[in-house]
Amino acid sequence: MTVPLSPAEPAALPEAWMREVRLSLSLAPHLLLTGNVRDLHQLPPAAGGGRPRLLALQDVLWEVCREQGYAALLSLDPLRGVDHVHAPQEPHDPALAAANRRLRDLVRQHTRPDAEFDSAQLRGLLLDLHGLFSGRDGLTVPVAMMIPYAAHALPGDTVLRADRTLLTTVEALGHAAPAIPAPGRPGHQAFGLTLFWVCEQQDQLPSAFPVASDSVRIIRLLRPNIDRRAELAARFIGRVFDDAATAEELEAVAGATDGMTARQVRTTVLTAATLPPGPTVFSDAARLVRVGITDDPWAGDTVRRQLTHAEGYLSERVLGQATAVRKTVDVLTRAAVGLTGAQSSAARNRPRGVLFLAGPTGVGKTELARAVTTLLLGEEAQPVRFDMSEFRVDESRQRLIGAPPGYVGYDSGGELTNAVRAQPASVLLFDEIEKAHERILDLFLQILDDGRLTDSRGGTVYFSECFIVFTSNLGTQPDDEREGSEPEAVTHRAADLLRQFTDDRAGYFDHFRAAYEDFFDRKIGRPELRNRLGDNYVTLGFIDEKSAGRVLDRSLDSVVARVAAVHETELVIDPGARDDLRDAATAHLGLGARGILNLVESAVVNPLSRELFERPRGQGGRITLTTLIPENDAWRPVWS
Figure 1 (cartoon, rainbow, N blue to C red):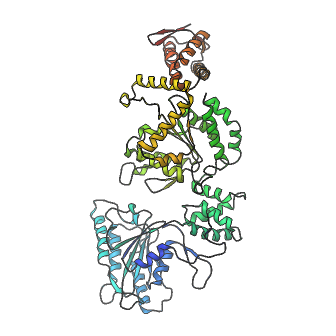
Figure 2: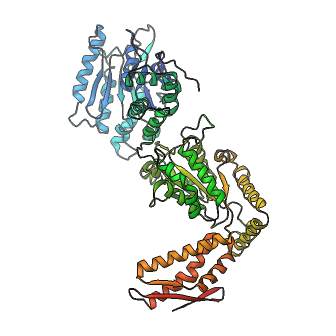
Figure 3: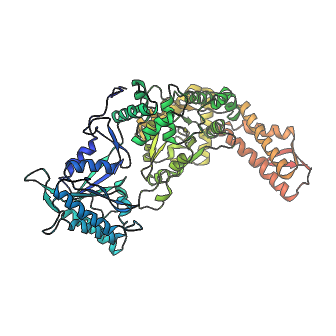
């Protein structure tokens, strides 16, 4: 990246939107300002020289209006009511002096102790301003008024007559805006009254606001671009660190603050001054400002200590998946040392880590996500899980990012955006991702590329501290799609895949990789999403007989521990019964670990529950599973 500003060079040009406001004053009487309207904005140095100035929006608007010969800028302040904000202090022009006297009278007339205007009062104020330019004693210089919280000052879409009348008046005033001779431009006319309507988002305004009228010009204020952020960095670093910024510092701040406001750039520099110095101090400060967390699981030595035994820990949690475990540890290590996406200059805010886990059911995909969560966030932590089979229709995207304005649930926000906003450092699990509607998958393009997502209310949520796991059953469906999810077809497919895994392991992995690529490239036409996943794809194989035995023993031990804790009774499983269960478990490896857990539930837990319900043992009692007798594809246990 090229630094666009030398450390000592001041800004010379106003921002583009300021030039557009200056032009628009002669084109429309109503200017709607949206976007970055609450920020500080940089102006060139004043006539006497010095540094560029940082001003709030109303001060910038007055600078522009004053240059065009305006008498004053009023503001409908929610704290003070109508406020005579800006005017020449000692106007030498009699017309300016007369205008300010008239405006002061109007301000006194409309000043209210509660500073709150209803629809009728606001309409009266607008009509009185309009009336100043009518008649033989009308004003001869233009004035302006700023409504800084237009979305709240104007009524919503209601049936109240006063509200409808106000919005109609706003539109009519635009069409009947008074014209006067333009100051300093003989032969030209200007609008006597200019109204600046200000709100962050245009859709926050009531639908009856005349945005499509020729009397309204919409001007969007963008957040500072990289050049402007470098200028701001030079200004703030010089003040905070009492030293001129170096080119490297400008580049670091400008790059780390992408998408931030000028206020946030200043906060980033102030935050950097509180952190230990180092090559990443500005990017660390930007992360703190952006995400708003101080307890970062990726920082310090905590994750490094965890990663020293991560492979062994994950291998114990997810049995028989050495390849997937090694891949996961690689991704975690890359995240811990801050090199995720280091190959791309535009990857500063990407998620800390991403995994796409494919393979048959029951092989440990979801368990691996749970194990990663425990490793990073503690024993009690669970991944934020989304079952993507619940998002099969396009409309369900509203559950993730929130309903649009006017729809039920708008105020509640989205499940995904709310979860990440509440806990920026999370493990996000998107289970069976291929079942989601393809337009919902488009959301992940922005998450994986930019590390951020805009919710339905216009707020930005950052995923830069998240670890994201996608799971998929692509490649496990029966060859004949008409068979759907019939149990027999699924069982036969699992057996076929198990035989392929046993006889032709390379062919097995190639099969799943081909299904993965075919899904994104052909079925949904989103090869760019597959490209965003990069080399984070991994296929899990079937567990072997040894791993199946360990899964069975672990499951039975869990049942024994639960019986002891709940019933204070000792459960004993004779070796013969355990061997019968092990034979049954290894006979159906195609069903994975989940099949073994289902076996223990049907063969042990369900009959044990009936036994304890009908013949409860007392404290310190004992119950022994001596034998399991097969009966009609089921098991009949014998207890003693």
